[in-house]
Length: 219
Ligand SMILES: C[S@@+](CC[C@H](N)C(=O)[O-])C[C@H]1O[C@@H](n2cnc3c(N)ncnc32)[C@H](O)[C@@H]1O
Image (cartoon, rainbow, N blue to C red; front, side):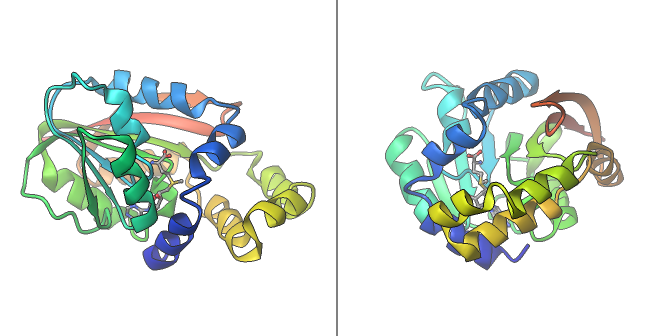
């Protein structure tokens, strides 16, 4: 997905984003992010790609030992994140071109970002480059599954009036497109393994619509 379009849309909705996300996930986003952090292990320099309002970094806690860095192309999101997380550093940028030296991070996370990336393969090359040997990648996302057709149908019919009311047509079409673009867990696993990662854990949540995946950089 074109990152400029994603950045524009997420910047425009940054003021309502946290409330909307809690509503859309029945508040579960917070426990999924905590589970991802536990699976990845808390130690070391941490990069959260597509950080949005910085919620993953906030959940690492103030006593986290190591850097907490968030990156996002949406300036509006980065502005909100800076207000919310004082002990964190935020950078405007994209996952496909990380402005960091090789091997400086122990952890790279993405919460609800993978399907929005413009080029998943390029991102994985970059994540591998900035991770130290044995470093960990964590991904939370909506996965394509048997019910995706039903979800898309609902978004185009029953949920559409609410979606249009809150977001307008351009943004609602964008969200529909992002669900169409989602990957199945098997596709993500194949891609990761072709890019030098080994998947070590997958949790499925919300009737299998959401996955939380942990992978390790291989030698
Ligand atoms: C659904 S939000 C997720 C925000 C946050 N991680 C969370 O869990 O609440 C997706 C985020 O990905 C960002 N994004 C879109 N394209 C990106 C790219 N190519 N590289 C990095 N982030 C990107 C968007 O700007 C947006 O903030």
